[in-house]
Length: 162
Length: 427
Image 1 (spheres, each protein chain N blue to C red):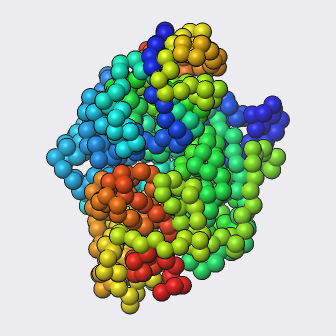
Image 2 (cartoon, each protein chain N blue to C red):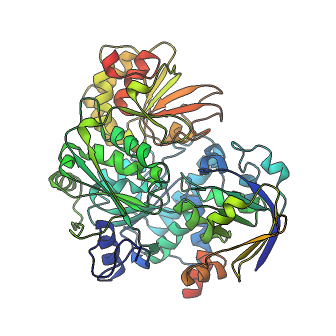
Image 3 (spheres, each protein chain N blue to C red):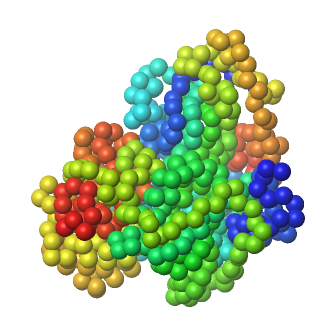
């Protein structure tokens, strides 16, 4: 699987309260959540995000609340992949479980800039930065996680085992 | 071998619990395992998504009706129609599945205060909860960690979850805390020291002679905030205080795990409780810790005393000790929220409400409410609150330009009186 898109970049410790503020958590409808995605950090996100865009960030992305509404909102807003230096562990699980591709790659996350065009090949683990003409190698997911991803998330994986 | 425990070396407390629940003799840091669950938890925000996912699996029963807890506590008593619909959805699911531990308003409390009080978690248990503060039960010597809604759905279906075995950091507590220093100050001090990702993916194991000076409520408050350092779980050695708590609250069988003497830790810190000062975390992150003497003049508009971090009976008592015979500052709204019905009744019977109301504070029914900016005390633009809660992120308690300062109940109550961040010593 390959994705291609432009980068929207944020800093360290992007928490799930700014990804989707709790005042919108009285629904779990993806499109409603997407309408408020990143609102308290970057009110322009919803207006400028395009389908296929890639989110990049620094350390500890998705820290805080366990709300799965956060990766759901990001996925529904059209983001095709998140690349960060590190992810908070609950967010990491949640993203894998709902089938939102995420990549932990400090080299890439530090080097990538807002507006760069990237092409990510999940099969080879290569991120190509088309703007800077550089590339980054990503460590493969453990086999177990690959199976979850291939099944389009944890629920698909469990259904296969029933 | 940089995985924390090479072959032949001992296991940490967390690793032992995980190994046992995975049916393995030993596990190593970094290993992926599938483990059996003793309790699966969800609330009114996360359980609706979990139920939707559970329905997709197509099962007509949960793995064990007695090992699931659903606690609508965040937006309850229902704050609006959408919230009421969400609670209705999970209530109907709980009835259909015969889930024993569904807690309706009237029995409900803030989930992480409620489950230990109801005896639903005991030492050695493995608990997952679709709420990040599920790590609270580490105070009981259980492995408990936050997960999302899909993991909750999978847990309800299969009674299992996958984990990457964490390496651990060890915190050796020594000495005796000073007056007005609580578990909250100790954990804010630690988070300030290691940072909001200082324990990312790791266990925080708490041990040492100083534990004897920490009450169970102190320990719950500390384990609760392990997630604010990025930890997978926080866990305490089991001692006489733990066992006394368990005997009082539960009839469930329990198992005491101890770390091996040769267990390997990625870092070890020794903390002399006698040197810890009352500590406040400034916005917008829980690691922006400052001791009370370094706070300066911070005027406030609201105080919240409650939450899964500090809504327990000792927290209520400390607040009452500070507020007794004093008045809440005219520029401050002081909102006090006992975390469960039992704590509410106990506070009432001990005369604490008389003190709160006489001081000019409002007492609320149990709810997470303002902690996450849900209801019952939302901040306007530019307003500041001192809260005994656990997060001070941008917009956490209301407007994105409002501010939350995290503190202990003693500091919060003193601040309510002073109208600025203050210590009880200053009143």
